[in-house]
Image 1 (spheres, chains in turn brown, red):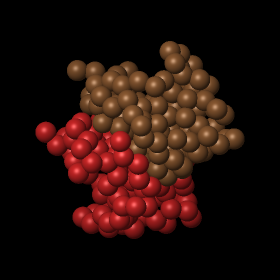
Image 2: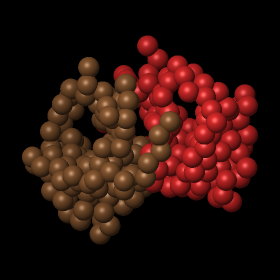
Image 3: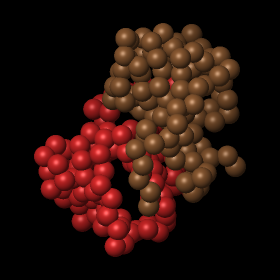
Length: 112
Length: 112
């Protein structure tokens, strides 16, 4: 068993279409995770993740802040305590709309 | 895409060796999750989850409160912001040690 605080992992800048966004990899291959990986994203004021689609799904939990999930012609408000499921191949991005940084967990399946 | 607040799902009492513990299933088979499931557990004052082992792993994130992860001769303090990996087949239980309810996300792989 392994316990770490999320701040023990470095916050790496997300490039390629993102704005004011960092990612910390909390549980993944190096920790021995066989099936799915846990990351923590922080989206600063007026920041966003890339608008894109990919084969794998996202399972997200909003920890702090407020924002939006924007898809193909759809938009959902997000607030702390929200759980989000984005199926594979759906176009999407997350954005922070509050003054506070939006913190969220974002889990993805392991590489096969 | 699907967004829900965690309180939209009912808190079901965890039986079988647990104390003062409820579980809410946030993202699972009914939501179309193909690979892993997200649940939110609340462990009340002096409560705990069952002391057990099983084949599947846990990926946990502590949202609120304080507690302990107890394993086979080991114990780790837990606080908000901690990420926890419990590999498959390791004996473990979680307990709340503060006055506040300990809230945590607990993710497991999908049934094959």
